[in-house]
Image 1 (cartoon, rainbow, N blue to C red):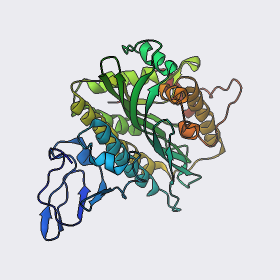
Image 2: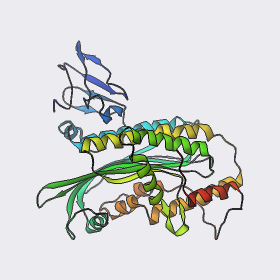
Image 3: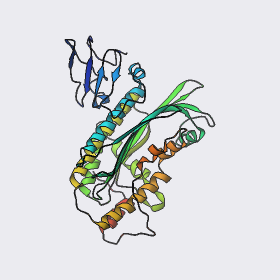
Image 4: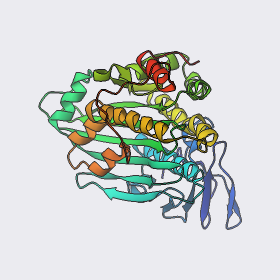
Length: 389
């Protein structure tokens, strides 16, 4: 185990370590004080991971996550300095934090179904889904950690984005990410989507590795509440500004452009941030930024859930919500890059890829909201994105 990764004093007996957003708690084992952190530098993003990790001198226990990691603990233990390990642990922490935060909003006690799956070609994932809750009609929070060889279709998609991959080859890859879509029951609560991911692709001809991060967080309201939108965007801007003040305006525009339902002439929602192919200024700094953004999801969204989950609504509002969900489905199935990559990947797990789709949606021929209505006001904003902060 790398000494540069674990910051420790002599270990005697069982060790228990808690990762908090501020510091590692110190525990005693066999009368010796232990001060272990998985990531020793004070400003390291992975101190944000909230999980207990027990070490008995031979193995690690990740029982505070939603399930066991996809990578076997022995491999994780021997590769603590690798970005593949750091990313896997970070996204598992994000998944656990978000699932528990959402469960706390379910007054009826509804909880997530946890489905840990293994991909024959390499890796697997953990799919967490809550359905038919009092607050959330459908909520999905997935992580995937997969490896194998990119098929030609996936390579072609990446070449179209400027990646320098040889055409017609099959390249070894590693990908890890967390993805979530939350469809609330109450139309006054917006839908949120976020995804943060890491890729490595190896060129066997010279053993070079290309790596990059991608992701984003965006909001899809059914009824426009401008203070909600401002809060959401300000939270994301604050996260971006800690790393580079040019990020928010650049990634906000990218989000507006990306989540464009082109055939409808409108955006999917009121945006947020979106970026891809982030490979600067360094791998560690890019990882720190991605972790910051992922950690900003809860404070950007949960206040909106708490504020509106018990708001009154009627039949008309529900029908509008279902119509807007139809537009959400159209984007995901026609345009979304992540959905396409998943469907192109050998051994794809379609239940997890299509987790983003709502339980119920609606299409109505030539529907147009009444002029001057709240629904028309939202539609106007979706056709003409605005600056929120």
